[in-house]
Length: 60
Image 1 (cartoon, rainbow, N blue to C red):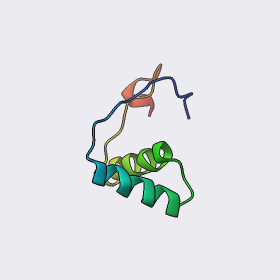
Image 2 (cartoon, rainbow, N blue to C red; image 1 turned 90 degrees about the vertical axis):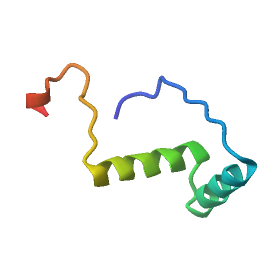
Image 3 (spheres, rainbow, N blue to C red; image 1 turned 120 degrees about the vertical axis):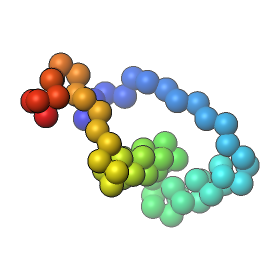
Image 4 (cartoon, one colour; image 1 turned 180 degrees about the horizontal axis):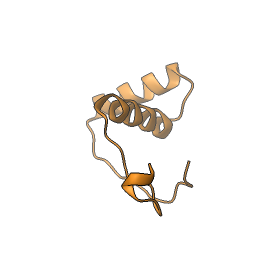
């Protein structure tokens, strides 16, 4: 996995923020890691892939 060098800022409702906090805590994850896991799972299920840097699509 690539080193994390990018940031992402989101505006969410207080209710959603609390839901994320509670769900992450239940899984013993940070909120950032919890969201990352959700996004990766969704992309895997939907067949969404990002082309790796330095590789052509045919090499993947």
